Length: 490
Image 1 (tube, one colour):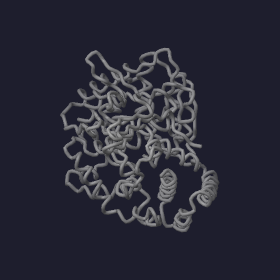
Image 2: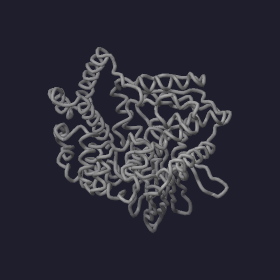
Image 3: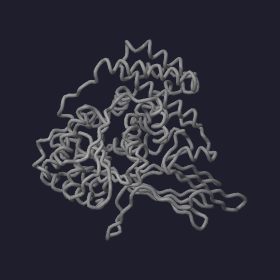
Image 4: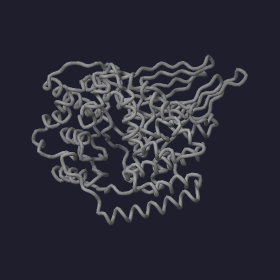
């Protein structure tokens, strides 16, 4: 049986004027650190129930996932969407939000797959008592500021070092998942600068990630475990859906990494402001659509390039047939959210940070890696966010501030390549074919025994595979597995 890590919940009810509470009267999640000025840092969330009311608070980002339901007489909150369902919350599907999610892999704003369950918003103070629900929150859409590259880079280095200093694990065992990218390398270099050597580095990814990580771990004589990225099992896909609270289509390939972290209480993750500071995540033509106010083109591009495509989605019939019918309404919902970021100096990055990053990417450190008691995310530092989120699109495209900051802070290692500077290698074709055959057999067996209603859609994908991108077929299979998990949960 697949279970989540360390779930907590609180259920409050008012019956005939009498107040009752079950579950955890108080709970704290994530990592919260206060400095001398009483500013709080880290990604955290908490609730406290006293005097017949509950108060819920979180950090500026709202990245740590808490879910709640509220009506006049009942309030339920948990870090597990399934604990709410177990307590009898209305399980009506939010058809429009789900239609967006299936096409782009993340929910917008504070939505979930269920109409009456919402995420706690960012920078939130929520109060529920006999007077009802009061909720105040804000989401920072940062306006552009002008910097020279020297000003931006020096400030970036300074703020990131302060961020790392807040979470240094002196004399403690800790693990660092290490890729071939920038975020984990930046964390590694600053930890080593402070004489904090990871007990172990773990790389789960493609061959080029492994090549770069091996260069780094050999350079610093670090223990290094390699998990070669390989086709995922159906069990891992289902487990991912549960551990991510039905909030991500991606991440199944990271399940082996999550299992390797069981022996550690502390880990570091590169989640954070990288979406604001790397040009590889920003496309010129999408930015031009933003400037021209052509939001519909951004939404349609997102659906076409991230989701499996409309023809394949049309294969899903019956209870979930609304997904293919809701295309126009889904586009409109994305347009509404895109407009919310139009005042940002880097609107594409802002949209990604508050939607894709918050609602899907963050489910890796705060879901799949939930076995770790403390998962530090220094690139989520609020001061660093204030800086980097004010960079303009053109400034990032021209200067690559994160890359320059890493190489300027550690010039002696600037010759070590990043993963995207190494040619991508494919798996051996025979290996790929055998895994494809095995996965198809496993999927047929799974669907025939547990969810036969989805068999026609899966079998149809096999007949269409010659006419469609193989990645789109895989995406549709991920969608089918997600809908199976959702269907069984409600």
